[in-house]
Amino acid sequence: MLNLSESLPPNDRGFYSRECMKIGGDLAVGMLLSRILYWYLPDKNGKSKLRVKKNGHFWIAKTREEWAEECCMTAKQVRRALRVMEEVGLIETRIYGFAGKATTHLRLIQDRFVSLQ
Image (cartoon, rainbow, N blue to C red):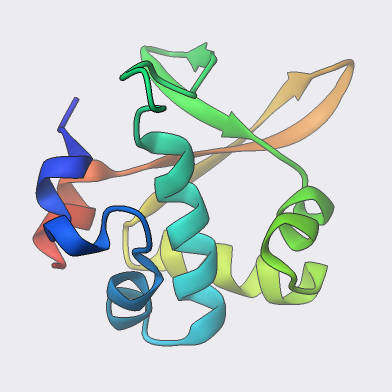
């Protein structure tokens, strides 16, 4: 696993939306990408915030509605932003069971993220 905190500029580790907007090309993609990075970066104790491991990868399990709430966006904006990121190879999405229901899981393709910086 890449150390993403090393690939972000030092002054942007706490707020990396600006860099993500450049990569994503617009506000919605940038905001969602910055939240995905938040989940991928270690917590203040250096431990991973990711808990769901499937097929050898760690995944974020959230519904579009949960992403919309977290990012102050509509579910439609989240759906489009996820589609854009998947089309350019930044993320992979899969449907897995989580908390008793089918939930979209996503994972950041870290090599692709680093290559776009």
